[in-house]
Length: 169
Image 1 (cartoon, rainbow, N blue to C red):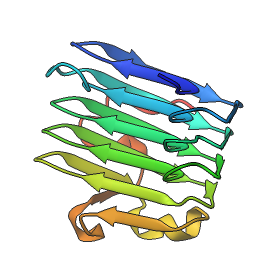
Image 2 (image 1 turned 60 degrees about the vertical axis):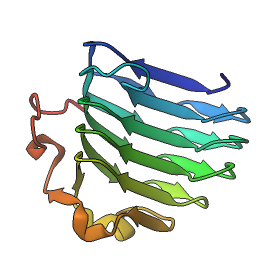
Image 3 (image 1 turned 90 degrees about the vertical axis):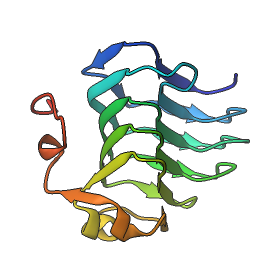
């Protein structure tokens, strides 16, 4: 494919304590960092207590700097913190929930000249930590599909629906 770092959960897999930290991901053909669930088969994979932190992602030619995708009945709980994401072919960060999946995202301290897009489709549930403060705790344009009112908000990542337990820093 052409992703710099790719994590893909399929079938009924469970991924816990995922850490993608302190990397330089530059000049990839597709996405810089791709964390996706259930993109091939209709199953219920889970990612919990995941953190993408302190990475520099630049120059992903045909994709996003960071892409997070849940589909089918998958569930993802992830914090994206203190990353620099610039000069990519599309969004700096695209977080997307589809089908009947659940995505809970904490987005804090990131900077991107490509912007951040949050997208919720199907009957999925997309929950964002401190939704109302996203523009002040990150640097870069924010866009929502559909509008921001369709997203849920919680005060901490540990308050996410179906949270398996506290996120360990």
